[in-house]
Image (cartoon, rainbow, N blue to C red; front, side, top):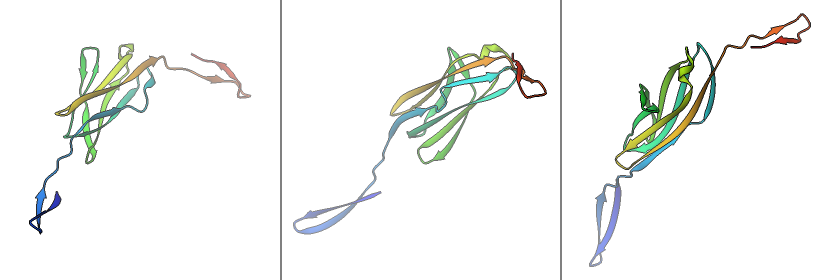
Amino acid sequence: MSMVVVEHLGVPAAHIVQVNIEIKPEVNIEDRNITVVVGSMQQLVCTVRAKPPPTVVWRRGTEEFNNTVVQVKETVYRSVVMLDSDRYSVNGTYFCIAENSVGKAQDTVTVNVRKNMRILENFTGNLLSGL
């Protein structure tokens, strides 16, 4: 709420005006390139700044993923999707897409799945082999 004071014929008059600020979504993914080991779980996280509250979806190609959206501040939201990297098929580029009545925005993260790496050391601590 804001108060506006105007003067009419030398007499001040106060009027209360409600101002609604709307923010087009701004999407940010901090880590844009993630490498995970086969068999592990991985969180993909994006932060969205928007008002009114956005609808947030995660996509890879035409596939849409279930996600959880939590409001962390008045205009800031966090969206999290969990990936089970039990197979290489989770490789790819994922889009976090946020939309509200003011607009739409997106950001991306690339996920690479690799084999579990075995590291062996000899008695002196020297690296013997990998993969």
